[in-house]
Length: 378
Image (cartoon, rainbow, N blue to C red):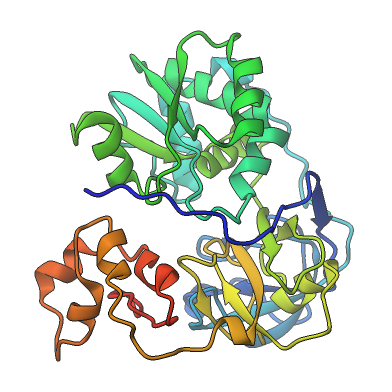
């Protein structure tokens, strides 16, 4: 595999504090199977009340009906509309009598399985916590590590003991100075958790690439994202579901880029009201990063688990030109592919599609702004 670094082209420094936005007037909850729906219009629902099979309300309020929305990939989804009463009412206040550091493996798995979470089932050797963010302008994990350091380390240590793991690593990029400093200042209380620092190479957020880089592809390593650790912490410590997430809002059209803690099901158009925009130019909206992201219409788009960032960039920065035959797409490809050549084929061979990891670095470095992503529709 070829490892490359991305240089910082824009001054898009994110604010050092997190903006809270949990009081959107309307919340839209995706429903995969309406046959499993157990509530109806005008019903009052409590926060975390089950609405359909494996679907829970992120807020309390009244059900208004159904509306079509779109997710971060631009796919249409049918959603229940909840008028948020802003009171965060629970039907039952369930106290967690179990001491956090006394959970056993089967108890943890039982709690996770209740909500169809199975990411701990096959971990039986060395655990690696991936806290890497590939996009240099996105700061969700950086903020998570800074604001929830103790929660993260407590949970990792609990998993180490409960799952009887010989080693646990937390992996960061060595240029994430604030995150590295925060972890180093606190990790001394957890001698069995080891910190691994990696260079600022693009693609290491992908577990397959990270495993190859750190361990030469050896298979006895299991990976969790640092965001999974927060989900586990909330369930075991607070007996609560994770109903909100961090999203970076940035770009040349934003005066002060921010990380916003926002409820699942919030309209993206409402999220943008929390930032001050520049009004002197026309902007394109890019969802999920300047490197991997897509230009999408955010009308009716809601915050889902796969939404990480919203960028506003000037339209003249995004205009497509003719190919310059510069070869940058081939030079930067981590998987040693030739994106321009393959993209021009009538049909891309399956073996090349399988090798491509959809990182979109080829499109990002292209001076002509040509979309060279082989997996753009995946």
